[in-house]
Length: 400
Ligand SMILES: *Cc1c(COP(=O)(O)O)cnc(C)c1O
Image 1 (tube, rainbow, N blue to C red):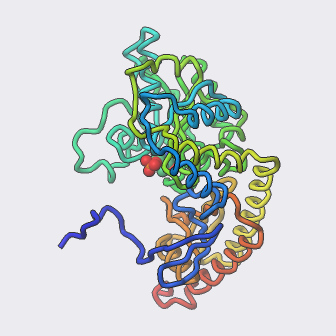
Image 2 (tube, rainbow, N blue to C red; image 1 turned 120 degrees about the vertical axis):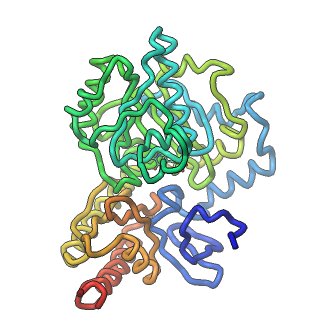
Image 3 (cartoon, rainbow, N blue to C red; image 1 turned 135 degrees about the vertical axis):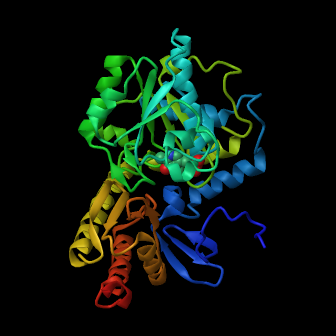
């Protein structure tokens, strides 16, 4: 019989009751070190006092009013994002997929309003992940995810990640923009070359295309800078954000330059929940922490410490791991073909450590941004034990 909760996920048999910082406890009292952060989302860890207090106080005042009225919390949050990014204006929504939908619509609208409605196609990349709605699935382009859902939404052309010649070849008079994750998250924690990102910016300028960055996973400090594209020294025309932006409270955003944003006039795009008082209070609380003096420098420092530790771990366990990839606190441990990431993930759970599998047989390590070096040491020790249990000598299944 089908479970009452629709079975769209293969869930681990763990139910968490409470959390504190980088730790979570199950209902039966087992403690786990959380280096998955609910898929790179609980940026401040669990039960962060400032976030909890802010949400509780706002919930007791007013939770939802709709966008028929002014929402001061959203005005404040938008102004702060504008002050700290390339963007001139921000649209708030509820999730990553919804942010990408808004971003894709903004790109199409820009060209239509500039007299080029024929420019509606976006160049996307193999291995990308942009969400599960029909348009974002089409932008994702993964056959496995698209199967059975009818014709994909038209307007997305896929080229190999990192291949500038392929990008140039794919540009036609119908091309409106380029859509890319600075680091492919679900696709295997695969960073784009900084040179490649610079070249994409240049080709967009050359052909009058919009550069649309999906920073749903890479943004809000996870890379060690507020936005991952800052490492490349470029600015997009439009960008999506979600995951860490609300610290675990559902919140998404489309950040755009004025030239793009000005065409999304009343009636062109909307959401009932998006940008409400509660979600935007959460977003402001997250920003209070992430923008505090020295916080991002601290993320960068602990990220470098984690990276070194993971490289040493990979060197100690060459039968399990091949190397480390990613940036900041979004790191992938690339595993040997003999060891599947789900096997490694389960071995970590057995040791009391949560991580997340990603594509290309990568184990994703994404601790909360408030993680300490001591907690990194603890995680590395747990992973070391998991690796030891997975080496062929110790595991008959792998020795075959
Ligand atoms: C998670 C993710 C999405 C989708 O976000 P949802 O909130 O699940 O809709 C889109 N793009 C990237 C890069 C993501 O990591």
